[in-house]
Image 1 (tube, rainbow, N blue to C red):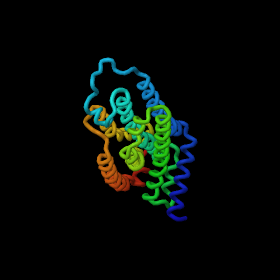
Image 2: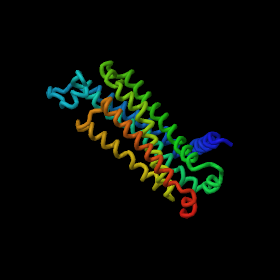
Image 3: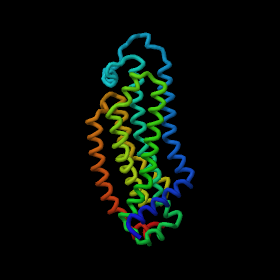
Length: 263
């Protein structure tokens, strides 16, 4: 059996288990749907508000983000940028949740020892355990973002939509989202390989979203403005971090230690 065949077989096994796990399946489907619902409801609520009777100008950082818009449309653009960042949490939340069950779940199911006894190498095992959570997380992200953009296009003024469909956000969704998914998956796998409780592994792996939360608060306060250079820099940093995490995961994942030290 070739290396590619072994990897594909393990990925198929992981996806089969995902489809039979109500918790994990609900996470894959539910997280993007919740984000779409929250974003759409908030944007439609803002659209229904009357103009500001005081006539007070909007903050400078909001006007900079709106690039020519003012009033309610500018507020919509500002809020939409927050929800864009919220959607970027999807490729971190979903894969980390699945990956946190990747090894410790095998331990609880008593299938880890037979799996490690097969000819599959550590690199092949990690590759399959990384791809299996990453793909559903990225696809769920793209599905949720596409649904959100479709609702925005159908319900919002064209000037507002034009500010949503911009190159920085396209770059973020196409390139940054998979890199974020890989980042959270590798952290989840390393935590899972050293844990005995799936819930504890999931909670620790979930800490990987904290940098993105900081970015959300940075844009909320006007300290950070998402732009193409910022997204490119973010992708470059994630690429380096993912490469480092992959190397670290191969070092942390000691097959014999995982079996003998876990009780």
